[in-house]
Image (tube, rainbow, N blue to C red; front, top):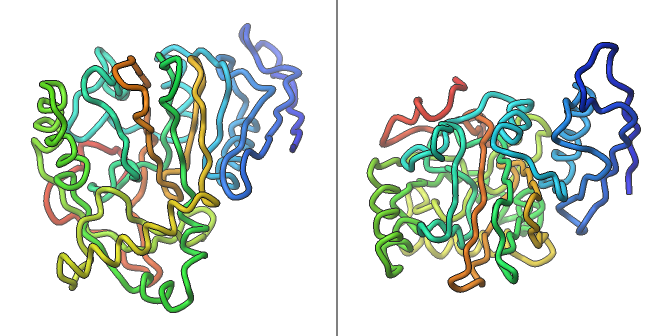
Length: 317
């Protein structure tokens, strides 16, 4: 466990300052995930503390905070310390009166039980996502994250070289949209219609270079439909082969939610999966996303939007 002492607040700070807090970073698995303790996200965090959280995030890919009990304003304020925020979603509506807040309510068919990186069907997927547990079932409803950097490193050398040369088309009219259409019930049908109400297709490098760490990671997941230049069958086989390295147990960490918990993940180096093992129980989580940049491949080529203009989604150029 890493213990980081943080300085007191400046004179004249408001009540709820961070004076005297000691931030603790405890790794949860061998390759991904850390629990950050000794800090209250309801307080006014110093620039140094935000920097320490950012470093923990870059090192561990996903970080967790127990029992924070943030409200919507607090979640938005915390996420905004890491950069400009996107709107809630490119096609789905935001939470009521909160244009930057995305509500995933299981009763409305919002179950992200497939491996994905957030919003890769646009040319500027988020840098990071902040998820807050609002209502958690008594049993089940965990989320699993996977490290796409170590997944790339695990590939055989010849497959790493091949992956680095490839580009893939990501679209919102793929696994998730089709899965929603297969599910029964009006909420899922309505959500499927909204999710694909505007079509997006983006060509991404299969291997992206992280803009802060320079690490290489696999950019795939449930929105990746086809490898450029290959047939549908060839693409499916190759994507499945590489995706299996992402979801190996040694590349993952599983979080058992409690109401009030907060998770933050580096969307440039992870995939995640919301486990739907809670039947008809009610589960509600709120997500806020930090705007991202256009991914760049090993060869320096950026992602290219093919269908749909998502410039309204993210304020970052």
